[in-house]
Length: 313
View 1 (cartoon, rainbow, N blue to C red):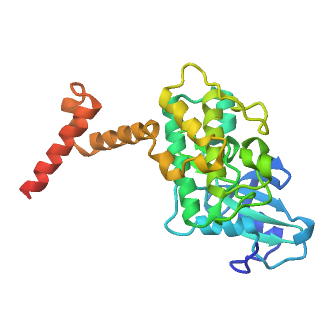
View 2 (cartoon, rainbow, N blue to C red; view 1 turned 60 degrees about the vertical axis):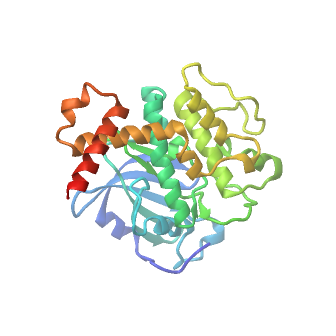
View 3 (cartoon, rainbow, N blue to C red; view 1 turned 90 degrees about the vertical axis):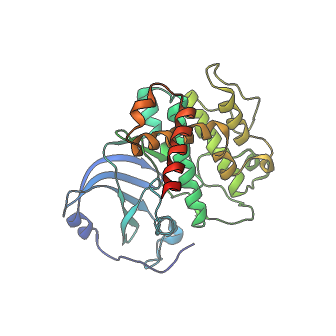
């Protein structure tokens, strides 16, 4: 679980010289996170202090698993929807991680508490970015294992999403995991039944719970251990309900992959809107017909124009 490489050994005095620590952003069993700025250029950062457990206190000079996982997912080409680890420092008893901090930003749990649950259009944008982040993690051999609104930052001026906190993560494997790390209310049903789970179905489950929470301001089940029939608010569309059911099927083998979820009609409609908006941006004549054509018609016109231009050349 530890890799001896990329170590920056230092005293906390160096951290204090390089970064100015601001107010606390969060605290948990792992340690604490503070807002900060880089002294050299004023770059906003997050400073995460992680307490070493007793098992690893004497393992100075080794790369902590959380750092190793973030190093993997931050390797080029990077994913814009995964929070970046800028550097890290080792110290007896704890290590310090310097992370990017978008400004202004807020975790999605707090954002929804202050602004109400997301509408379907907002939720689609969030979910597509989250799927991109999780697919990127998979491609780097990383299982995040703690997907939930609290671990998603939303840049409030752009609506961009950042997946953060790999402290419960693990190296991705095809076989079952026999230990649990993460948040029990987002844990897959099979964990409570057999104390084992696989990465793909567990990720799909947490994705479904997260989507339900963002849209409905509550968890889909009163108890994660006892799953009953899903109940939806009347305003949710049929496609949206179907996608959530895809993710929250009781049988792990029946849950869809990230690739299948991404291709669901509910999300593909958002992909199409993004495509048409891009066409508006690229085509200077788009404004002439925008008010007279539906999105489908407009996209077809633009595609025909491009094909005509290509054939002429």
